[in-house]
Length: 423
Image 1 (cartoon, rainbow, N blue to C red):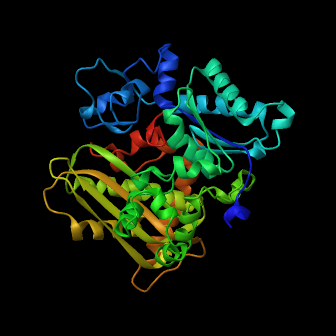
Image 2: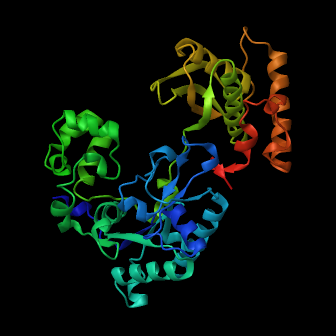
């Protein structure tokens, strides 16, 4: 009955193995499967986050994301500082390889190290099947960049991704091909549920409470029960457990995530307390409001959260929906402070800060209330837009608040980074 919903295309999904670490190994002429290399800024201390570890370390049980202090002590580890611009260059070079084989219309670049490609209309042209083409692509990537890759092949994007994530890990050549008849044997025994693409920890917990512990439990359940509990997402999940996905790479402008919120966060590399933390909050409010102005958006809801140091654990988060949307940093900062002052446990060290703005609307004329100083807000808006223009022309560090010179400020360092990391 579900056969009518099944696509029969030839989708190849390629992932660049331990990408950041593999790039560093390639530049050093080292084999990532024999080299204990990690990508992190060691100068930030033992609490610094490790962005990537080599495949060799993964075979030793080292997770891809951890902290320096959690790395094995009995291994002579090679440390490499993150260089995002270098990784972007490698990624662009590899995408260029894909484009030798296939049109841009038939590629969906999912992330810096992963891409989907629809080779359905190319097999006859190359006189090769999808498995042969995938292996040729992987060989070319390695010969030209020194980067190893893994691959999943399937009749739709979901199946290719599942074959990559679940199947390719157990293959000597890192390639797995799944078809619909493989689902009962390959996918349904999978547990825990979060191993399946699209199921997060929160969803897993909710499904566990319904008695679902293996993917096959969901596949054999009543779709109406899932839809009643989770809405349209429940129905989609049911079909996904049968390998059914109607997404098309050619519709990539529709399937790319559309941001309905802007957020940013940072891990602090020393303990912060009041009042120094207010400086960090103000700088982050400036950052997110600049993104709002650049996108001609205003936000109605703000979110703020912190995490305490490792020895204390925990933290808090809160949100506030304002009466009117705004892109004014002082108003948004004030809401952050209210949430912070309400929940902060005095004298506990702060190590993480996360903020976000949501309920975005297109910017209109500045809306004011009787309780706000209109002259002050209009002046702030004009100054902010002028600063935006200077930063766009001369760089993010061309103009900063005077408080950026204080010891507690992190804005100058963060402005030099790409994606939160050193270029």
